[in-house]
Amino acid sequence: MADTDSIDSMIEACATYGPLIRSLMFTNQNTTTAATTNSGSVTGSFMGRMVIPSMTSPVISVIFTQVDLVTEDATVVVAGYRVEMGSLAISGNTFSSGTAMPTRTIAGTSVQTASVIPILEVTTALTATTPTITITYTDQDGNTGQTCTVTLPSSPALTTCFNLAPHLAAGDTGMRAVTNMSTSAGSAGTLKVYGFIPIAYGVPISPAAMGPQPLSNTLPFFPFKASDELAIYRFGSTSTTTVYANLFGVPETGF
Amino acid sequence: MAVATIAEIQQRFAQGKGFFIPAVTSTPGAATAAAAASGQLSVQILVNNIGTTLPGTRVSLPIPPSPGSPLMLTEAGISRNTAGALFLVYLYRMGSVNLAATGDQFTADSATFPILRTEFGESSKPVTLTPMIYIDDAGTATAPVFSLKTNAGGAGYVDQDGNSTAATRTMTMPSATANVQSGYIFRLNDGDSGVQSISQVDVDTASGSAATGVIFGIEFLADITHILVGTSVANLMVNGIALGDLKPGVATSGTATATLAILSIGTISSTAAFAALAGVLDS
Image 1 (tube, each protein chain N blue to C red):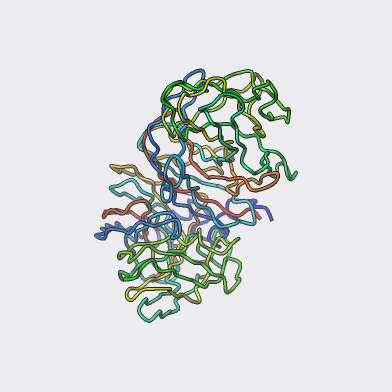
Image 2 (spheres, chains in turn brown, cyan; image 1 turned 135 degrees about the horizontal axis):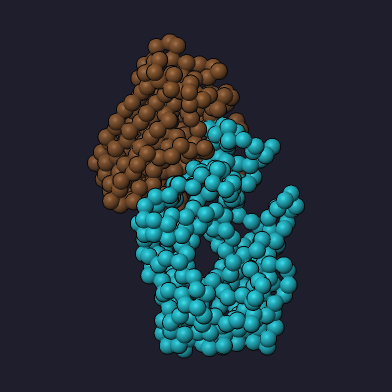
């Protein structure tokens, strides 16, 4: 029986091994570049990340059972697992491969994960006039060589993010791995594709105040391993802002 | 194989066989409130903010491209800084009506209605739509009066049961200058609850100046209501098992212009909505 099969076993796991509790304060000082219908249809910003700390046997992973997300402006704020699947140096049009989405146990079954909302993130500000970015990827069913094409606004700012989901190949809903990236234009900057699996979200109004979010039955209890990244993205605003997040994680000891 | 359990839904979502849509809507203009003779219910359309220029250019909330399977909506979180009822809908554009002249003034879009979906395992069942007129170009002189029939008294719509019907009730715009972006639900005959298609609109009283309306058929997908100012989260698996399909229905022939939108009913406010829509492929 897994630690997370019942509320009782989660209480016992917290009492025995100790929960993971974190408060995160992320301030995005960069004015985000607005998206277009050719680049995600919703403006996105990277707010911050947390690296999951080391674990000692028998603890092998942590699931977050409560996530509070507070911000100052009316937006959609999403927390989730992310992994860097590939990067593109605009200068030289050079692709570097990253990590494919992992296999994880979700609701008692081991599954090959894929990202329903892959993110193209500006990690170094671009110098590029409306660059068309072509991403070659493996889809949610394992089909290789699929392509996703987005045309970005000119010279998007640091931490600007673009939702790739609307631009996947026809019939696709997810991305397992990135095998190539290229640009049609530009002289500087870096873009990275992150596989992202939401675990919690908030939809605060302005001025914002959010209480604990009810547990979702759709977003999975995703088991984070040591050194995994939990990231927070914001959608719907170009302004600089702060996100305050409280996380409560329950330890798992294996299946 | 059809989705059967909540565990399967979480697994499919993690496998990338689902969707998570951060939806940020346009800010609608100040609509003119409905009155008894214009359907009672004031309607505003909230569509994707990016790419939309109201009233004429309305961009659908984005969904995965050309889904091969139904997109089962299982959860929706929404906020809006005004109280009111919000529904996730498809708007199927049926045609337009020239309110500046009398007589038969409906110009149908090229797609053939009804919209079809699989229901109870039976394919190609006609979908009953709620008909609405949306003001694209406001008049300035006279409140138009019109109805779903021909000028000669013939049928103007096919009702929910497939009967060709001539409307006996008229619609009178609540003002000679009803604002652009105002939406009004058609008054149908006693016993009718919706339409499968619209074939004609008879304008009895013209606006006296240029005025046009777009006719939409509304397909209800999910109640993501938020009554109070603030945030609502609708878990559609446990709150009444209300799992709408975000893949649009198909026209009988041709391609209907389908816009995934949030409909505000009963409240007029120039306020955007922010939503998170999540679900899985049902295949």
